Length: 247
Image (cartoon, rainbow, N blue to C red; front, side, top):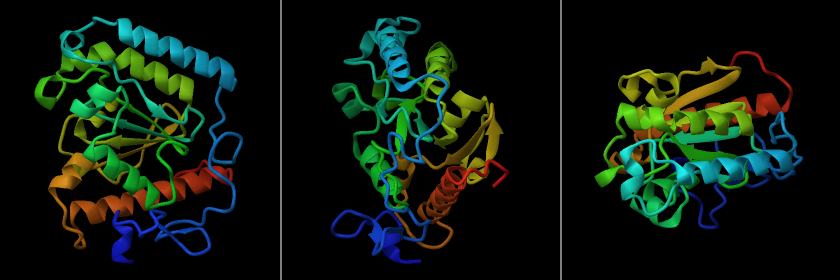
């Protein structure tokens, strides 16, 4: 495994070896992983109806005053990416840059997330749909409370129902708690596939944690996350091939 694989992309930014091979991952083939491609999820709604429903959901989020977070936000932060993708990424909540821009994962952690996905041949805006457990920024970027997560949970569940992802990446312990109700250290939970409502879930370290733990040595958080991402890419390839059996 090359050191460039651990999210240090090649100078051209591709993260790919010659011939379209994701470094250390599965072969991609020649078709873009979007729209009507094999990597697009088979949703229940047609794309136009789905997109209208997601726009209505975003408006409902904007109008929500179900907890105290709305009072301190600049913008509600609902999603970015492709709602037709097989992969959904769920994080904790918006930070300062996300609050200012209205899009999730656009700060330093988001830039690392982009490189993480790119390292296995996935584009974060084309091949993934990205959201958070809560849609408004908690003060000082603190962890959302149980009440705040519960207030936002119907919105997140509606997003999942509309997007119909086959694989969900849970970035960090708060995402695991918000979706599965499981509290505990992400170190024990990461890297383990879980089936949930007909989908495959994979908990991973949050990119912000990896920014604080930059080592790429074998067994380090970054090295472990690289293994997890390769596993996710293999699962997506299996689904693309029509294999929905256990990993």
